[in-house]
Image (cartoon, rainbow, N blue to C red; front, side):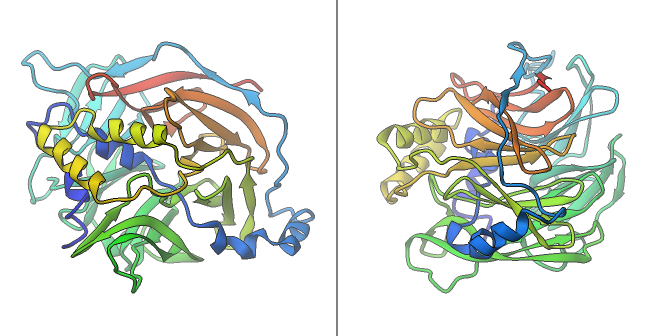
Length: 412
């Protein structure tokens, strides 16, 4: 069974699946981290003492955090069907704001880039289902890297590079972006520097829960390796005969990159490694850990989200999957990380049990925590500007995807 089978095939949303898959939305958000045991070189006493007097290392001290806010009502919502009753959003896996205030949505369900005006009205689409030039077979992700949109099509093993107006500038193969390596997760900064991690290839293939060590590295937009970041744990996997998939409630790598720092997260505790863009360790971000022991409420929340908005057959498949797994003894410490327009690092604490909102912790480039912010628990954040938060929210009643932008109120 290849990487597209087992759990990942459940994320494919056909054109007829009008409301999209919440499972793919939630799993797209869960990009967690490496085990703390692999962080010894960054977390021992000598490293901490050396870090305190070096200007190229971030601080581990946290300032008193302010509570930032968003407006109660979104400034933009995109969800309704068009005049012919066709959905304007199928399965959004990437969103970015354009210079004119409009947005572009990478839509896996509708196999296209969808362009919307600042008022949310549909403007046009670029691409369609297929394997020819300008067509998409299976959109994995879209990253905004400066003035370019990088769209990965794992069906065609390629990355399509678009200008912000949707024009295709080039269509390199994986190797031309990833440095001749197979990647599991990627992110990029506005200068086009990418951070990647690889797929697990451990020898332990016994059925059940496992976690392998994988490489992390930086590349340029042409695939030239810029720096090696070492090997750390990859995603927590559920191994079955013939393959593996992300483990329910498991931990996965978190990657983010700013103008001069790259970040690799660990979900076993609230601890994030920072590196310079030359690959040198540059300190850590950390916060107090909550009690991470898995509770029945955590499991119930996962099951509700894992079936919300999905077809009967997919829901039945999910239920069968639950019956063969033993949920991990602890939940992730966090499940998402981004760098905003001011180079602040945002880390989302893992929502628990009946939580309807998620707490985000915001760190300055120096490493000190400067703010917290509560956002809807089913909002997958794709981009954070100076005064806005943009993402894809899931209606908890219907499982329907809604592209939403909220006005951000920073308290300086």
